[in-house]
Image (cartoon, rainbow, N blue to C red; front, side, top):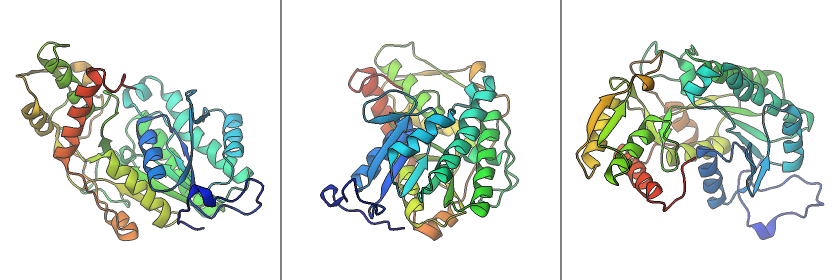
Length: 334
């Protein structure tokens, strides 16, 4: 497998029987928050990118990964790819709690359908499975490295852990090259306000522009989480795709835990108005891990990846983005 890029003018003709000699990626879940950013990043880096999503959007191949027929059609339509980044998933934990069957169908069965389609079509693409550090569950030790057992505590985490285990099985039992990514919390411009940092930023921006009263509603502020900027995350995915070792799992994290109370205090200092804080029971999870902190030594050792973007930059980027979105400059949130 080659990993260098070539200009579009140098692409082989469609009738060529030879596999492409440039990185060509299929990105599932390309209509989602991270999928959109990954597609844009890869294109900027010279990749030829084919995206799929469960929404009918221009430039994307429509595919519901819970439908094996649609997944087979996707692989056939995408053509010869060097890499497949599998991001399509149900990612919102409360939604998975309410509809656990949907989480299993999307996150586990969708992965099975994709790997079966790749095997059936004889595709030689390297699969980069995007899992979740939530699969680790309550830490037995900190920081969490890739040898930590998977002990998921909610339907979302269970579905992602099961898919992770299945990919590990296929890595040993089939001819597929699979790399498993385990990203910790990540955020950035364009993220839904279902997630904690984006929720804080949206509420602050709404208060600043007079769209909401000066009260910010919060869940558990004592929990501590390991956060990354989404741009650091997509860079890790590309490096793992090009330099990672097949069969391995890689954490993608900052290596630092930030207490949610401290995060909130920092964002309130960036606000342009005075804001009160009130607890909201609806924002509390039935099972919440007190502290999560990851280790990225393996990813650094195998690919050279290091987090580059500071946490303060992440918070500022979120506030700038939500101020623009609420002002109508960037359209509606997803």
